[in-house]
Length: 292
Image (cartoon, rainbow, N blue to C red; front, side, top):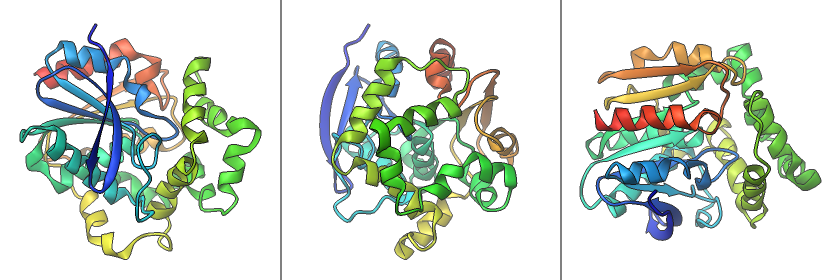
């Protein structure tokens, strides 16, 4: 088993801290909400053993990665972060990118912005933005399944999430993956991340700056529109059958948004954190896809 070590690098104006293992072509592994880079601890050594340089950054604002100097957490910026990390860590070569939840948003965005820098992408538990974003405001089931995106617009959201020692986070995980027995040390690590000064507001601002027009940066409007355009690099996309309402249906209807190959994997009985619920199966499929 290859050793996981830590590192840090400045990219797109952010001090990124990351976990890494191995040497070779770069594979970036981007986490989501509410989570951190440790979500890929079972995958990184496998990628390293297969001859890859596997790197899992803590996303912007998620400690120990720095807060955004300008306070911005729009989805388009996540894609620019990925592009900058590839430039900094990829030794001038194209990379593969894996993303879960917000990390999948970052992955889709980067594939739209710099397709020449990305060989393949893998997304977990999120439909293509072009399929998801419109339904977030129109489809009842999708609205219900993404209730937190609306709740996080409230000024009291930080207080609610932090209440009772961040019990909100554990309850959110359980709702999102109802058949998953969450290891105590896993959720404890997530809570530790959110206890760092600024991380909670940063994580919530992902939602405020992306889903609320009043919070969006108008200078990023063109990039945000581009992020929802069809994906032109090959993609492997995972989804579970026990994730929140409306999500699987949106995932199943996104095929027209891929122009260079889409392989979809739906795992029965898994929820939003399927890569942790069935790691052996998900990791093996990812490795086979990257090596094909």
